[in-house]
Image 1 (cartoon, rainbow, N blue to C red):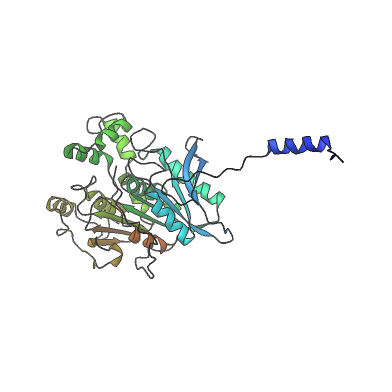
Image 2: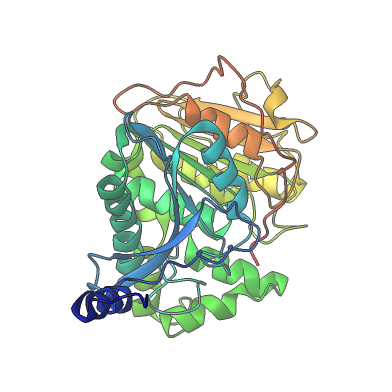
Length: 354
Protein backbone atom coordinates (compact mmCIF):
# COMPACT_ATOMS: atom_id res chain seq x y z
CA UNK A 1 0.00 0.00 0.00
CA UNK A 2 1.33 3.40 -0.97
CA UNK A 3 1.62 5.84 1.92
CA UNK A 4 -0.91 8.61 1.87
CA UNK A 5 0.04 12.27 2.38
CA UNK A 6 -2.02 15.15 3.60
CA UNK A 7 -0.95 17.87 1.16
CA UNK A 8 -2.02 20.82 3.39
CA UNK A 9 -0.06 19.37 6.31
CA UNK A 10 3.09 18.96 4.22
CA UNK A 11 2.82 22.52 2.91
CA UNK A 12 2.30 23.86 6.44
CA UNK A 13 5.35 21.99 7.70
CA UNK A 14 7.51 23.31 4.86
CA UNK A 15 6.33 26.87 5.50
CA UNK A 16 7.10 26.53 9.19
CA UNK A 17 10.60 25.27 8.40
CA UNK A 18 11.21 28.12 5.97
CA UNK A 19 10.04 30.76 8.43
CA UNK A 20 11.96 29.37 11.42
CA UNK A 21 15.21 31.19 12.31
CA UNK A 22 18.38 29.34 11.40
CA UNK A 23 20.22 28.35 14.56
CA UNK A 24 23.94 29.02 14.13
CA UNK A 25 26.87 28.93 16.48
CA UNK A 26 28.29 32.38 17.26
CA UNK A 27 31.87 32.39 15.94
CA UNK A 28 34.51 32.29 18.65
CA UNK A 29 36.11 35.63 19.52
CA UNK A 30 39.85 35.23 19.28
CA UNK A 31 41.43 34.90 22.71
CA UNK A 32 38.14 35.07 24.61
CA UNK A 33 36.20 32.26 26.29
CA UNK A 34 33.31 30.99 24.18
CA UNK A 35 30.79 32.22 26.77
CA UNK A 36 31.65 35.83 25.83
CA UNK A 37 29.42 37.14 23.04
CA UNK A 38 29.39 40.10 20.69
CA UNK A 39 26.40 42.36 21.26
CA UNK A 40 25.24 45.82 20.25
CA UNK A 41 23.41 48.30 22.44
CA UNK A 42 21.77 51.69 22.02
CA UNK A 43 23.94 54.62 23.06
CA UNK A 44 22.10 57.55 24.61
CA UNK A 45 24.73 59.87 23.10
CA UNK A 46 23.50 59.74 19.51
CA UNK A 47 20.97 56.88 19.44
CA UNK A 48 23.44 54.70 17.52
CA UNK A 49 24.03 51.00 18.00
CA UNK A 50 27.43 50.44 19.59
CA UNK A 51 29.33 47.13 19.80
CA UNK A 52 30.63 45.41 22.92
CA UNK A 53 31.59 42.03 24.31
CA UNK A 54 29.27 40.73 26.99
CA UNK A 55 29.04 37.86 29.44
CA UNK A 56 26.60 37.09 32.21
CA UNK A 57 26.25 33.90 34.26
CA UNK A 58 23.52 31.52 33.12
CA UNK A 59 22.05 31.43 36.63
CA UNK A 60 20.12 34.69 36.97
CA UNK A 61 18.55 33.87 40.32
CA UNK A 62 21.15 35.93 42.21
CA UNK A 63 22.39 39.47 41.69
CA UNK A 64 25.94 39.61 40.31
CA UNK A 65 28.68 42.25 40.26
CA UNK A 66 29.35 43.91 36.91
CA UNK A 67 32.84 44.63 35.61
CA UNK A 68 33.04 47.33 32.93
CA UNK A 69 36.46 46.87 31.30
CA UNK A 70 37.93 49.50 28.98
CA UNK A 71 40.33 49.01 26.08
CA UNK A 72 43.62 50.86 25.68
CA UNK A 73 44.42 54.02 23.67
CA UNK A 74 44.73 52.45 20.24
CA UNK A 75 42.50 49.45 20.87
CA UNK A 76 38.83 48.60 20.51
CA UNK A 77 36.30 46.25 22.08
CA UNK A 78 37.91 43.16 20.45
CA UNK A 79 41.30 43.89 22.04
CA UNK A 80 42.83 40.68 23.36
CA UNK A 81 43.79 42.24 26.69
CA UNK A 82 40.14 42.12 27.68
CA UNK A 83 40.27 38.33 27.96
CA UNK A 84 41.83 38.54 31.42
CA UNK A 85 38.88 40.52 32.72
CA UNK A 86 36.43 38.16 30.99
CA UNK A 87 38.02 35.06 32.50
CA UNK A 88 37.97 36.62 35.96
CA UNK A 89 34.25 37.35 35.61
CA UNK A 90 33.48 33.84 34.40
CA UNK A 91 35.45 32.34 37.29
CA UNK A 92 33.82 34.63 39.88
CA UNK A 93 30.28 34.55 38.45
CA UNK A 94 30.36 38.26 37.67
CA UNK A 95 28.84 39.91 34.62
CA UNK A 96 31.24 41.52 32.17
CA UNK A 97 30.98 44.13 29.43
CA UNK A 98 33.79 45.42 27.20
CA UNK A 99 32.46 48.43 25.25
CA UNK A 100 34.02 49.97 22.18
CA UNK A 101 33.41 53.59 23.31
CA UNK A 102 34.19 54.83 19.77
CA UNK A 103 37.37 52.78 19.35
CA UNK A 104 40.91 54.07 19.01
CA UNK A 105 41.61 57.59 20.27
CA UNK A 106 42.23 59.50 17.06
CA UNK A 107 38.77 60.56 15.96
CA UNK A 108 36.64 63.44 17.27
CA UNK A 109 34.04 60.94 18.49
CA UNK A 110 36.60 59.11 20.67
CA UNK A 111 39.20 60.30 23.22
CA UNK A 112 37.04 61.30 26.18
CA UNK A 113 34.23 62.92 24.21
CA UNK A 114 30.66 63.24 25.46
CA UNK A 115 29.84 60.31 23.17
CA UNK A 116 32.44 58.20 24.97
CA UNK A 117 30.84 59.03 28.31
CA UNK A 118 27.38 58.20 26.98
CA UNK A 119 28.59 54.93 25.42
CA UNK A 120 30.10 53.69 28.68
CA UNK A 121 27.06 54.61 30.75
CA UNK A 122 24.75 53.07 28.16
CA UNK A 123 26.80 49.86 28.33
CA UNK A 124 26.05 49.76 32.05
CA UNK A 125 22.36 50.23 31.32
CA UNK A 126 22.43 47.41 28.76
CA UNK A 127 23.97 45.07 31.33
CA UNK A 128 21.38 46.05 33.93
CA UNK A 129 18.56 45.27 31.49
CA UNK A 130 20.04 41.97 30.28
CA UNK A 131 21.47 40.51 33.48
CA UNK A 132 20.69 40.45 37.19
CA UNK A 133 23.18 43.11 38.29
CA UNK A 134 23.99 44.06 41.86
CA UNK A 135 23.94 47.83 41.49
CA UNK A 136 26.01 48.23 44.66
CA UNK A 137 28.88 46.38 42.92
CA UNK A 138 29.41 47.96 39.50
CA UNK A 139 33.14 48.28 38.84
CA UNK A 140 35.28 50.06 36.23
CA UNK A 141 38.81 49.15 35.17
CA UNK A 142 41.31 50.20 32.52
CA UNK A 143 44.97 50.76 31.70
CA UNK A 144 46.63 53.43 29.52
CA UNK A 145 43.83 54.86 27.32
CA UNK A 146 41.48 52.76 29.44
CA UNK A 147 43.07 54.35 32.49
CA UNK A 148 42.35 57.78 31.01
CA UNK A 149 38.70 56.81 30.43
CA UNK A 150 38.42 55.24 33.89
CA UNK A 151 39.64 58.41 35.59
CA UNK A 152 37.35 60.47 33.37
CA UNK A 153 34.29 58.35 34.24
CA UNK A 154 35.08 58.48 37.96
CA UNK A 155 34.63 62.24 37.73
CA UNK A 156 31.88 62.38 35.09
CA UNK A 157 29.59 59.82 36.74
CA UNK A 158 30.74 59.21 40.33
CA UNK A 159 27.40 57.78 41.50
CA UNK A 160 27.62 54.88 39.05
CA UNK A 161 30.65 53.09 40.45
CA UNK A 162 31.33 50.97 43.51
CA UNK A 163 35.03 51.10 42.64
CA UNK A 164 37.31 52.38 39.89
CA UNK A 165 40.76 50.92 39.22
CA UNK A 166 42.83 53.15 36.91
CA UNK A 167 46.31 52.17 35.71
CA UNK A 168 48.83 54.38 33.88
CA UNK A 169 46.12 56.77 32.77
CA UNK A 170 46.49 60.11 31.03
CA UNK A 171 45.01 62.82 33.25
CA UNK A 172 45.81 65.92 31.16
CA UNK A 173 45.61 65.56 27.36
CA UNK A 174 47.14 68.94 26.54
CA UNK A 175 50.10 68.24 28.79
CA UNK A 176 50.54 64.75 27.35
CA UNK A 177 50.43 66.20 23.84
CA UNK A 178 53.48 68.32 24.67
CA UNK A 179 55.24 65.44 26.44
CA UNK A 180 54.72 63.15 23.45
CA UNK A 181 56.09 65.75 21.05
CA UNK A 182 59.15 66.19 23.21
CA UNK A 183 59.76 62.47 23.55
CA UNK A 184 58.85 61.67 19.91
CA UNK A 185 55.94 59.45 20.99
CA UNK A 186 53.43 59.43 18.13
CA UNK A 187 50.36 60.01 20.31
CA UNK A 188 50.49 63.79 19.88
CA UNK A 189 49.39 63.19 16.29
CA UNK A 190 46.38 61.22 17.57
CA UNK A 191 45.42 64.10 19.85
CA UNK A 192 45.66 66.70 17.09
CA UNK A 193 43.65 64.50 14.71
CA UNK A 194 40.89 64.05 17.29
CA UNK A 195 40.79 67.71 18.34
CA UNK A 196 41.40 69.27 14.94
CA UNK A 197 44.57 71.10 15.91
CA UNK A 198 47.36 71.75 18.38
CA UNK A 199 46.19 72.58 21.92
CA UNK A 200 49.37 74.55 22.58
CA UNK A 201 48.58 76.95 19.71
CA UNK A 202 44.80 77.39 19.76
CA UNK A 203 42.79 78.28 22.93
CA UNK A 204 39.67 76.62 21.51
CA UNK A 205 41.56 73.38 20.92
CA UNK A 206 43.08 73.64 24.40
CA UNK A 207 39.58 73.92 25.86
CA UNK A 208 38.55 70.79 23.96
CA UNK A 209 41.54 68.96 25.40
CA UNK A 210 40.66 70.10 28.93
CA UNK A 211 37.02 69.08 28.45
CA UNK A 212 38.18 65.55 27.59
CA UNK A 213 40.70 65.32 30.44
CA UNK A 214 40.08 63.73 33.85
CA UNK A 215 41.63 66.65 35.74
CA UNK A 216 38.64 68.81 34.93
CA UNK A 217 36.23 66.44 36.70
CA UNK A 218 38.14 64.51 39.36
CA UNK A 219 37.13 66.90 42.15
CA UNK A 220 33.71 65.23 41.85
CA UNK A 221 35.20 61.76 42.41
CA UNK A 222 36.13 62.21 46.07
CA UNK A 223 33.28 59.91 47.15
CA UNK A 224 34.20 57.11 44.73
CA UNK A 225 36.52 54.31 45.86
CA UNK A 226 39.34 55.06 43.43
CA UNK A 227 42.61 53.15 43.18
CA UNK A 228 45.15 54.92 40.95
CA UNK A 229 48.30 53.01 39.96
CA UNK A 230 51.31 53.81 37.81
CA UNK A 231 54.70 52.27 37.09
CA UNK A 232 57.61 54.46 38.20
CA UNK A 233 59.44 53.74 34.91
CA UNK A 234 56.54 54.86 32.74
CA UNK A 235 57.22 57.94 30.64
CA UNK A 236 60.75 56.76 30.05
CA UNK A 237 60.31 53.10 29.09
CA UNK A 238 56.60 53.66 28.44
CA UNK A 239 54.30 56.28 26.96
CA UNK A 240 52.66 58.09 29.91
CA UNK A 241 54.74 59.80 32.62
CA UNK A 242 53.79 58.62 36.11
CA UNK A 243 53.22 62.25 37.09
CA UNK A 244 49.79 62.06 35.42
CA UNK A 245 48.56 59.73 38.17
CA UNK A 246 50.06 61.84 40.96
CA UNK A 247 48.24 64.94 39.68
CA UNK A 248 45.03 62.91 39.32
CA UNK A 249 45.33 61.90 42.98
CA UNK A 250 45.77 65.55 44.00
CA UNK A 251 42.56 66.53 42.22
CA UNK A 252 40.63 64.00 44.31
CA UNK A 253 42.24 64.97 47.62
CA UNK A 254 40.67 67.68 49.81
CA UNK A 255 42.49 70.99 49.52
CA UNK A 256 41.65 72.05 53.07
CA UNK A 257 43.33 69.09 54.82
CA UNK A 258 46.99 69.52 55.68
CA UNK A 259 49.17 66.93 53.98
CA UNK A 260 46.37 65.54 51.79
CA UNK A 261 47.95 66.76 48.57
CA UNK A 262 51.36 65.80 47.21
CA UNK A 263 53.36 69.04 46.73
CA UNK A 264 53.81 69.95 43.07
CA UNK A 265 57.53 70.55 43.49
CA UNK A 266 57.94 67.07 45.00
CA UNK A 267 56.17 65.58 41.96
CA UNK A 268 58.50 67.44 39.61
CA UNK A 269 61.58 66.34 41.58
CA UNK A 270 60.39 62.73 41.50
CA UNK A 271 60.03 62.92 37.73
CA UNK A 272 63.45 64.45 37.26
CA UNK A 273 65.05 61.85 39.56
CA UNK A 274 63.08 58.91 38.18
CA UNK A 275 62.22 57.69 41.67
CA UNK A 276 59.82 58.34 44.53
CA UNK A 277 62.39 59.51 47.09
CA UNK A 278 61.11 63.11 47.15
CA UNK A 279 57.45 62.15 47.63
CA UNK A 280 56.30 62.65 51.24
CA UNK A 281 54.10 60.65 53.62
CA UNK A 282 54.47 57.25 52.02
CA UNK A 283 52.52 54.42 53.64
CA UNK A 284 54.03 50.98 54.35
CA UNK A 285 54.72 49.38 50.99
CA UNK A 286 54.62 45.61 51.52
CA UNK A 287 51.92 44.29 49.21
CA UNK A 288 52.19 40.73 47.89
CA UNK A 289 49.49 41.37 45.27
CA UNK A 290 52.05 43.35 43.26
CA UNK A 291 54.34 40.33 43.02
CA UNK A 292 57.64 41.11 41.31
CA UNK A 293 56.61 44.75 40.78
CA UNK A 294 56.39 46.01 44.37
CA UNK A 295 55.07 49.44 45.36
CA UNK A 296 57.68 52.18 45.77
CA UNK A 297 55.23 54.89 46.92
CA UNK A 298 51.71 54.84 48.32
CA UNK A 299 49.41 57.49 49.75
CA UNK A 300 45.72 57.54 50.71
CA UNK A 301 43.40 60.51 50.93
CA UNK A 302 39.78 59.74 51.77
CA UNK A 303 38.48 57.25 49.21
CA UNK A 304 41.44 57.67 46.86
CA UNK A 305 44.74 55.80 46.85
CA UNK A 306 47.80 56.34 44.69
CA UNK A 307 50.40 53.59 44.24
CA UNK A 308 53.60 53.88 42.24
CA UNK A 309 55.10 50.45 41.60
CA UNK A 310 58.42 49.20 40.29
CA UNK A 311 57.28 48.76 36.72
CA UNK A 312 56.36 50.54 33.53
CA UNK A 313 53.27 51.01 31.38
CA UNK A 314 51.21 48.06 32.59
CA UNK A 315 48.47 46.73 34.81
CA UNK A 316 48.82 44.15 37.58
CA UNK A 317 45.55 42.26 37.24
CA UNK A 318 45.81 40.37 40.52
CA UNK A 319 46.08 43.61 42.50
CA UNK A 320 43.46 45.48 40.48
CA UNK A 321 40.75 42.82 40.50
CA UNK A 322 41.21 41.78 44.12
CA UNK A 323 40.90 45.40 45.24
CA UNK A 324 37.72 45.90 43.22
CA UNK A 325 36.20 42.74 44.71
CA UNK A 326 36.40 44.35 48.17
CA UNK A 327 34.43 47.49 47.27
CA UNK A 328 30.72 48.16 47.68
CA UNK A 329 28.77 51.25 46.74
CA UNK A 330 27.89 53.53 49.62
CA UNK A 331 30.77 52.23 51.73
CA UNK A 332 34.18 53.83 52.34
CA UNK A 333 37.05 52.45 50.30
CA UNK A 334 38.26 49.12 51.64
CA UNK A 335 42.03 48.93 51.35
CA UNK A 336 42.69 45.72 53.28
CA UNK A 337 42.39 42.62 51.10
CA UNK A 338 40.76 40.12 53.42
CA UNK A 339 41.03 37.13 51.11
CA UNK A 340 43.16 36.97 47.98
CA UNK A 341 41.36 35.53 44.96
CA UNK A 342 43.98 34.03 42.61
CA UNK A 343 43.87 34.37 38.86
CA UNK A 344 43.14 30.89 37.52
CA UNK A 345 45.18 31.48 34.38
CA UNK A 346 48.60 33.01 33.79
CA UNK A 347 47.05 36.25 32.65
CA UNK A 348 49.44 38.78 34.12
CA UNK A 349 50.56 40.79 31.13
CA UNK A 350 51.58 44.22 29.95
CA UNK A 351 49.06 46.25 27.98
CA UNK A 352 50.74 49.15 26.22
CA UNK A 353 49.28 52.43 25.08
CA UNK A 354 49.49 51.10 21.55
